[in-house]
Image: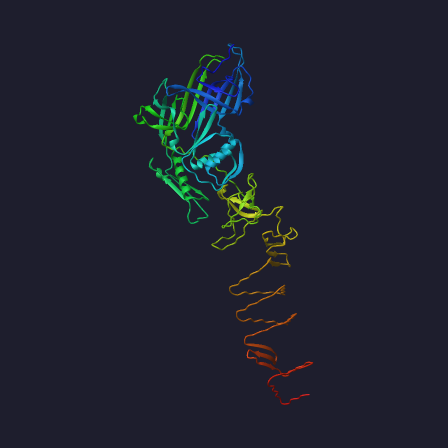
Length: 619
């Protein structure tokens, strides 16, 4: 006996299993603007066994006959099978004696598969459109951009432990970009848009509003509503490159309902830039909050109605609605095929849909419903730079890092954005300043837990980067030890070391090359015991005024070569009653109770020699 076909049905399904292998008995569709569609198909096999693996994940198309310009054409619903259930086997049919098995299938867009890849990833210097294209291409998602606006590039945008679909969804929501799907035979396309001008009319572009049963397309159960929404949205942020010019944006429209201006949504973004972008965000956010202020809920038998398309009334009991256009924002449709299993006769079909719509001039901005991941606590990362760099830093003292979860980074100067480094003190050209170098492991926090806003709060040692002092042997030592750069070794450093071992306390200062000390007023040094100074080369001391030195003991001066003492006016040497005085005019006076001059040879020479004394003895 001849097997049944779907040829006489106005709604049918095509699958990779071949024509009429599966027969559609019921079809439910749920779709909406900025909503992934979900179709449910109830089917039965035409007396044959099927392998579920041959259908799961595969593209299937449901077609529905509809009128277009007076012609009967197919409307398509295409997607992939995300779930297939076997509902059991029926008793043999009297008509052909075959065994029939019922199945239900869930049909979703290709983009639904993006929910099944969760990632940590960094995108830099790309716009939301660029990021969407990159992800859609990776997943083989067919898409079309009908964006009217130009979107700024994100300097730094992080996907953190979220699915690809959640990530791109929150970016689209953030920018006010909505999407809907267009279906063709064997394919569907995700359409991104940001303006009401992209709405296209349904094939049944003009319909009647009527109650009761009509054979022709019509809308029934029409209701309209007015909802309370905020009347103002404001956003404020902080830009550390322009700390006195806080990015902020605000938009208000409180004229739609009474007291609406009293309801404001204010949000703060810790680090943000671009006043223009902040204002754009405020504009689209208010449009999102107010998009459903005027709602329409209805039911119809219009087969072409779909989310993202428009219609208008050619007739309505409320004459004010005639000619008014609406865009469908959400729709659920049910279609049933009432037929005898195994029959090839024409079957009775019933189709009804329920939908929401708003005036077609409304830009249906998506709601902010996809949460942005929050990074709780502290992470570690490794400082990066150009190849061969030991220090990679900008004028703000910011550095770049490679996060351990970043699988695509190359540990170079492009691994992250510039990240500020916390200091113990930060003033205007004063404060403390230590910055991490390439290869060091640092502690990273995130402002408000935002993955896009990292800040370095410290550094830690690890097995490759051990502390400067051997531990625990030197557990009483602490301090600061640097490393000379470039290509410095562990013998090239500056250091301030504290030894706190009781009875052996020590402060050690090591300068790898020069040491400059500048005191603008007094310097007082007190040494409780000895001081030893070793100078391997020369010493130069310059004193602008006087120098006074007091030694309670002795003073020994030993010079290997020569000693030169020069005074501009006078040199005096005195001990007890003896003295030697030398003046700048050349006069030398030697005084003492007894002056003895001895020498193997003594020469006294002058143009005039005067010797006076009570007794003068010359041998």
